[in-house]
Image: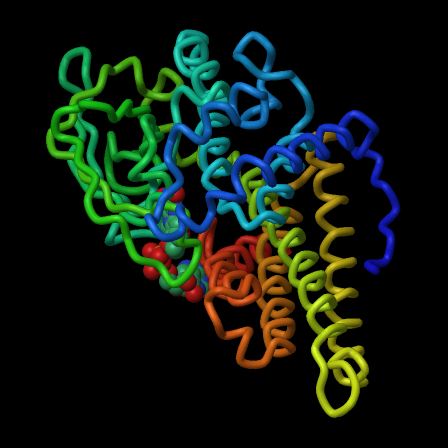
Length: 381
Ligand SMILES: Cc1cc2nc3c(=O)[nH]c(=O)nc-3n(C[C@H](O)[C@H](O)[C@H](O)COP(=O)(O)OP(=O)(O)OC[C@H]3O[C@@H](n4cnc5c(N)ncnc54)[C@H](O)[C@@H]3O)c2cc1C
């Protein structure tokens, strides 16, 4: 048994019953297909349509834009349940894209896109990373040139989650001079768009159900009114201002996965027999699992505290950076310790613990590499 956590103030009865509904839906409608999705390398876009229509994609949006106007805690609960069921973070990326439009878009842009994003009619991605720049985003080179009432985009992006399946991308482009002030965000509706091409779906060591693709823009023309906000050069500031919330979309799954790994390992250790006892009977096993249970508890407590502050509007970026790097490190350590308990079975791809191990590793890299998080924390010390 996990130690019982106190119920955090943000977790009221309404969110609790929402969590139960999401859990039931995820287990019944998504989990049975995961093996197929892992083999084919993507989750079909249509899967997110009923998920959105039932209100699970963007519950936090205002009602006027198709949401339920609830707090961001509800989105965190959705991400928690998806991670506990080993569904990769495709809907988190969709959420991030929608929030750029919500927070910085014009009224016309919100009307045009948000309810389609809430309902799952559009699946979104966010395209920042390029072959030549990831962490150092201000050096991005994909160019959007103004031409009358359009922008013409040329360039390449890589590692784009939902790159293969998305119908709408928020694309970080260079509209001005070198450096952060020359970056803008443009919305690109990708279907049948001349000059837009999805390249390879990249083969990863984990997260096999999630599509991660290269994308190319070759003279892609989008209406100038697709510039998020009305002024060029705001993209870098817009990207930086969302960081606290986005980091929590990585910390929450870390908490969920540590708990899942512990649960799987406890079950296994208590039934695996060796040397006339169970694996759990060894003091080493008990100590290791006591350590992992402590990690699970501390990570969850920290994450809950950050969610509370997110809901209150007081989550400072520093705390969110800490949550991102520290919780993802704990995730990797905890899953590694748990895998060891499974012996050779832990190395077999069919065992969930093996998937948790390979799926976890990227948590320390994407969403801002952990070294970048520490650098940002240190700047404020
Ligand atoms: C599965 C997956 C999904 C992704 N999804 C998306 C997506 O949807 N959209 C998108 O735009 N991008 C996405 N990315 C890209 C991801 O955000 C980048 O990989 C990440 O930001 C790191 O950039 P990079 O890979 O170019 O590494 P680099 O920037 O080359 O960094 C390499 C390493 O250098 C070190 N480093 C970097 N900066 C510093 C520093 N300041 N101080 C000290 N050390 C440092 C770190 O150890 C880092 O891991 C995804 C990546 C993966 C693997």
